[in-house]
Amino acid sequence: MADSNFIDYVKVLCRSGKGGAGSRHFYRAKYVPKGGPDGGDGGRGGHIILKGNRNMWTLLPLKYRRHIFAGNGGSGSGGRSFGKDGEDVVVEVPCGTVVFDAETGEYLCEVTDDGQEVKLLRGGRGGLGNWHFKSSTNRTPRYAQPGEPAIERSIILELKMLADVGLVGFPNAGKSTLLSAVSAAEPKIADYPFTTMEPQLGIVAYRDNRSFVMADIPGIIEGASEGKGLGLRFLRHIERNAVLLFMIPADADDIKEQYEILLRELEQFNPQLMDKQRVLAISKCDMLDEELMEEIAKTVPDDVPHVFISAVTGQGITELKDMLWSAITDENNKIRTDEIVHSPLDGHHRVREEDDFIFEYEPSEDDEDQEAEDLRSISAEEWGDDIDWDDAEEYYDTDEESDDKK
Image (cartoon, rainbow, N blue to C red):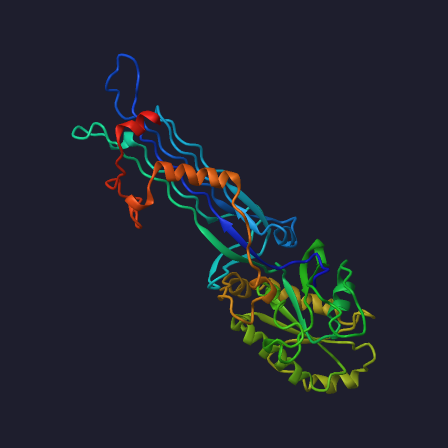
């Protein structure tokens, strides 16, 4: 997987911009001995915004962009001049990206549509200047509000592909062969297990110029929920599928038992997958006659529609498309698909090499200059640890000499 350009799980450190401090300036001019307060407000800190892009299919750009920092807001100045707002950072992600908190695994948000924007981290509000606090009883307020601090958070972005049909089956069940036969996709096909190492998408043409999207994921084996094989890492890509197409080869020892094993593994990954419509395709049937098909049909589970197919000869492909299209357009199934609940990340769903990634960065010169400016304007010790940003009655007091310097 290290050589692949397909990245569906990445850990990133994000930090919004902090708000600028309000000014404590007083108007000074010749023949105006008491001009009064005119300190402007501080600028807003920059936001971190996620934006869906339908032309992206991987999180690879974020693999090499581990730090996403928005700009800080500028401080206010005299003449009621507002500070400059911090620069927002817009991060483009593929449609179907889900965001989790890296520390707790809590679900935060998701981006599903092209052009959709989600404000991931809000920038800090700028502090109010001293001109806000003047009154008939307090004509020379020598205090102003500081800006809100930045919000820093480690997040995990998880890509869940958007497709109509998801292929589920054991290794070498013929999933990639079927995808190559019904679409223009060119997945790798070989006679050894786990030939497919990353998900593949293909557009399947249907009648009257209609089409649907089919997704192929690496094969599942018994015990995948315990980490065997490729584990459950790629099952996230079928959570959004409207229909699950189970594929079991005709030469399997027990078709019903293999079907139940696959169902059990899916349920352990996400119980909500049990609510999706299912279709069973018995593959590699080009060498079977009608008598053998009738015998095999007796062992197929009764609760799922089935069809015998052969991707090599095209047997049953048209019937399979009809069954899939009927399930995709089922209104009841659409309602269930739209109500996806993303469960928090746990040990089975995480990728260890990403979770163990350590963020190391050095403050830039701009960060150091901004920090020095904040220390000169506002003392954290005098403000205290807790600041009520919505209460304008807590102020910082200083002498008139420092106001003249400002």
